[in-house]
Picture 1 (cartoon, rainbow, N blue to C red):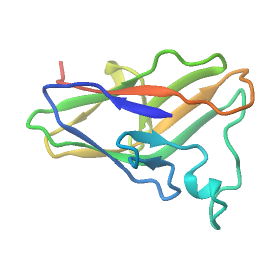
Picture 2: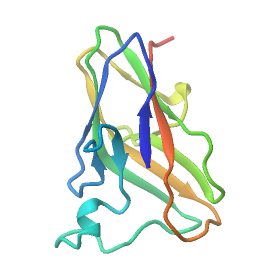
Picture 3: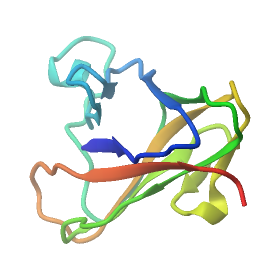
Amino acid sequence: MTVKVEDDDDAYLTLDPSSDLSRATTASDKLEFYIPGLKTRAGLSDTPTGNGIAPNSSYTFANLLSVQNRGGDRVEVYSDTTGLPAGVETLSLTDSGRQTILDGRDVATEIAPGGRFQAGLFVETGDSDLGSYELSMSIIATQPK
């Protein structure tokens, strides 16, 4: 899956991968998540044995990245996803500390200048076909109301 950071003139947000299992990377100049992680795909020891997510299931992957406000104003951070394929019901950013799905402005995490929070992903599947999917999600930072 690919995460695109939306243009925002009011804040400078950094997204730093922090997953021990290499589930997040910025190696290709964009933030990408891999479920299962790259270490699992490579068969390295001490990694989960699963090969992916199952149909009709919900998963939360915590602490995949650190989100930091490096701007001078407070910001609210949340995610928006459109165009999900059939069988993928939900893809959202989460606030790992608050254990909150950040799927709209009304549940956004507010960050002060210099502040940060640990974020993850929530994925919910329906009656989906087996296979690999590339999904896109926007991370939005805006000034509080």
